[in-house]
Image (cartoon, rainbow over the protein chains, first blue to last red):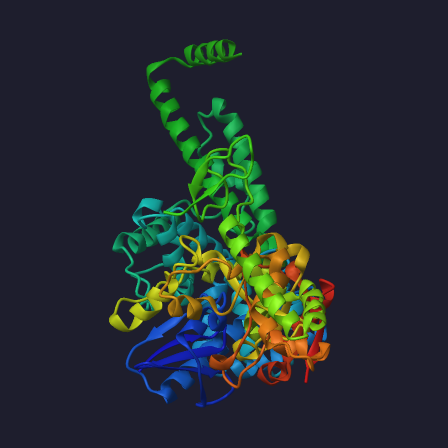
Length: 331
Length: 282
């Protein structure tokens, strides 16, 4: 027989020749007769449909339960992170989650989704920690790792977003592939890979989807992350921004504006880094600042190289006169 | 291909069914299901069926009961039954935290290749909604807010003010109807929202007897079978998405609590916050 399963709808439709039956989550293996025409009513807006061939009722019931638990665990994790809900509701959610996370694949699914986007406005990690019971170890670890990985999540998210649209074949294909990649836990795998130094290739599970992923998509994603990791590093903690740029400034009289911008970017980045620990939603902004800083540094390097070249062919006074002329002309 | 005409007189040009705005003057607010129910042929045929049903009831000395039923049907509401998780999604979709992550998983469902799934493909391409099947949400017409629990643990009663302009009503489960009529829809079996009472009378007046009481009306309109195969109802087609603000009230089955007490608590809080009434049904 064949089956359509949706964890969100909490229902499976089983097709055996002309006979059609529905299994509901929580009802074990007991199926009730229905019609194929009930499809739209049974599955509603669910977007997690699985189509299985050659299966038996016990398998369908087991898979339905698991798919439901995965979706439930995701919802309850969001409830736990929701600062607008009462501590009681969040605590009960934490207790249920601890049980649901005893199945590793359920926890992986939730991480797979949460690692695909930085936490948005309204997420309350601190509150979530204070709501969960002391013995909810699995939930506690998930929250800790989620907080620790926010900057990697931001980088992986941005690297995905810059993959050229034409590699996907169209915007609809892009969103289909994105959803399938999230479900398969690819973002989580790549975040983990990046957090461990982005060495080798990330281990990506096969997609549980009939979609074919163009190999160029994965290559472009990884390449962007590698390129970004290999770029100019973040300034080290406590190191003065001036120390990092001083050596570039020896002939940079006319790169003064760039230097000011770079120093401001360093300052902003340092402040953001301190804030990200408290407000993970700022990780994306921090990543953007970092990119801006790198771009400014690249511009400065190019400018210095150009100035070097010019300086070797013109006397210093001539260069100053030229700069003055440029200013007058542009004014 | 069937076409619609832009309702703005200054434009008035034709365009294919299924578009949400006129491609010529770009005026929005075109709901194809409503436009199709508004066709003259449909309205005339519906009026004919309605009058015939009413007159037959008068001949059976049931005229007063039919008038009462029509009054009740004028206040009927659309009810969608959804699972606990889908209800929770709907209740929280207004919050950025939830919508951010729901969007990640949102993708159009694609049927796999294979003969078995072709049966489903035929349903998806049903002739009733050419080019816009995926935009339609299915509900049932109800007099007491009780929906079809075979389809989900929560009965979401929709607000007239949020759906009346984009809803149409059909005689029964549209796909079953189409199959019986060899995928050719006779006129007079669908209505715009404000004509739902007419459609209801055209279908139900035949079941009215002299002994029928007002208390019998809800079960006459929506009969819940032991299985979904035995459900009887008038089908409501709502164009476009739903949010928590489309809900008038929610009936929650006891089964929900047994699936996840935490989710039930969260849904109740979210509904309270949006001032949507809820109750646990026995």
